[in-house]
Structures are given as C-alpha cells and as structure tokens.
Length: 391
Ligand SMILES: *Cc1c(COP(=O)(O)O)cnc(C)c1O
Picture 1 (cartoon, rainbow, N blue to C red):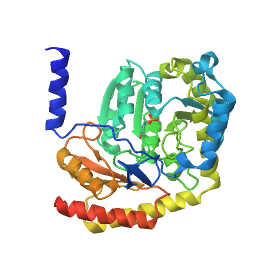
Picture 2 (picture 1 turned 120 degrees about the horizontal axis):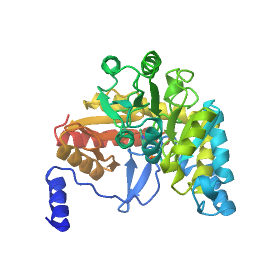
Picture 3 (picture 1 turned 90 degrees about the vertical axis):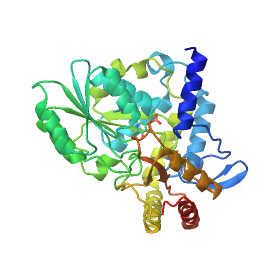
C-alpha cells in the first residue's frame, strides 16, 4: 500500500466513524463572545476560565517582556535561554504554591512526556487512572515501565493492584487532579495515603485545577486539603493562567533532579519571554482578584442547573467543565453543528480523546460570561437538543 492509499483509507475511516477533525478559525480571541465566519457566537469551550488571556495587565506584561528581551529566548534553558521572566515566574509559582522551588516547561504535554520517564524507568510500575490525560498516558508509555490502569477514581481497585505487585518494586501512581474531560476530582486524600502506605510516589497533573480550585486558586490540592501530603505536582499555564507552558512545583531537590534529566526540558528552546511574563502577571491577578473565581462559580452553578433542568445527562462534574454525555460520535458531532447554527460554539469531544461510546459536548463556562450569555446559550441547547431528540 502506498502512503497516499494509506492516508486516504485512514481519512475515509475517520469520516465514516464520525471522527473527522478539522480546524476552526475563531476570528477574535478567547472572549465569551467570539466571531465565527463573521458572526458572533457564544464560546463555551475555552479553558481560559478567568478571562486572563485578554486581561490588560497580562497583555501589557507580554508586550513589555517582548520589548525588553525579544520575541524568542534564543536557546534551551540550560544553554543561554534562561531570562529574568523565566526565573521570576518560577519564584512566583513556588511562593504561590508554598514550595521550595518550581521548574518551568514549554507545555503540559512536554512536561508529562518528560517528567514521568525521569521519575520511573523500565523496572518500575506505573498505576494510572483510566481517564488520565493523553499526555500522561504518553509519558507513562515512553518511560518503559510496566503500565497498568485502575478504574476511574477507584481507590479499592488501585489498592488491589498495589497489593499484587512484587514487593519493593518502585511504583508511581499517576492521576489528573481535576479530570479534563469529566470535570470531576481525583480522590487525592486517599491516593496520597495509599502512596504512603505502599511506598509509592504520586504524580498529580493539575492542569485544569490551577487558578480555579481551592479558596485561593492554588488548585485541586488546596481544594482537597492535601498540599502537605503531596510533596510535588505538575500544572499548566495555558488554561486559567491564560498563557502557555507548564510547571512542576516541589522541593529544590526534585526540581534540580528534573532539570538534569527531563529531555523535553533539556532539548527544547526555552518558552518565549512573553509567555512567562504573561503567566506571572496572571498569577498576580489570581491572587488580587478573587472575584473572578466567585463569578466563575456563579456561572458554573447557573449552567449546571440550567442543563440539568433541560434534561441533559451530565458527568459527575464539580467544576466549570460541564460535559453533556451523548455516546455516539456522529450524534455528538451533529449536536455541536446544530449548536453552532444557534450561535453557540461548543465542539464535540470524541474518541480517542474520550473512551469509545462516551462522545460528549464538553461545555465550559468562564468568569467572563454574563447571565444573559448563559441563558441565551441554554435556549440554544434546548432547541438543538429537542431537534435531535436528546431531551
Ligand atoms: C491541557 C492538559 C495538558 C496539556 O497541557 P498543555 O500545556 O496544553 O500542553 C496536560 N494535562 C492535562 C490534564 C490537561 O488538561
């Protein structure tokens, strides 16, 4: 089979299964109302939960850093790419999280791809939640460790796997803090206690929790009161922090180890000064403007109850991620197209992003939506849902 035949067969398969993906250009940034093909649509799928990507001080910080340091860092962090915006952001992250140190990465995907293999290798065992983010799964696979999954949030299942392992086998437990496609939380208290009891390490990815969960936005660890139990964790800067990049926070020892070993840290150009400075400014606003989180949670409640009242089936979410379960990929895709026709942008999430037959519309609200935006969106959900006999 030639490459061309192979590509054509694959693309036909995607189309037949309702799994084709395409890029959509939104003509204005991640505001609550964006322009799509010249008309306004209510955006209900951004992870810019606090609207910080378009906050004037965040934008100013990015512009100033670019003017001062240039558009690119010019080399990897370990060669000559470490600039004041990087080290200042690392200090700010460590002080925000109450850890000794922080280490910055180019993206969450890169961090997971590199940190997991740095923490455990061929002779080790990884036990990961079945619904972990794809980047965690790829990191687990790349490590070469024996890789098993436990049922979603099922600590009994995890414990049975821990009991069955060979004694003394180095073990890493891997989980999202706030699950990206279901909006629910990992049972971090129980995971931390199992890790302690069975001498395993725990790696938590708090990409979605960072900035929004917990009384002060420090994330899912704060929300669940386990910051003292979990010595290090990872999070990202591209969601509530409105920028791009990722971090690991923890002891000075672990960050020093990671900067000596993580290949996607060592062999990639440092993040642009602008993104580091923007994330730093966003971190300051998260601490200074708690009212953004208040509005976010008000909107979460309004949308959650609105969708429930209409009769949609939601996941067991406790976050601004409000997934409407559809099942079949083609139906989910048709639903998202109908929503768009009604002025709401909320794309379908299909395999391989979510397990087979759990395709969904992943609705997210932000602090920037007004009650009117949400009420208008709920009307669109009602019309499109009725037309497709989903409600
Ligand atoms: C978005 C996400 C990532 C990837 O982070 P990027 O910075 O976008 O590469 C990793 N883990 C989880 C749980 C995520 O939701």
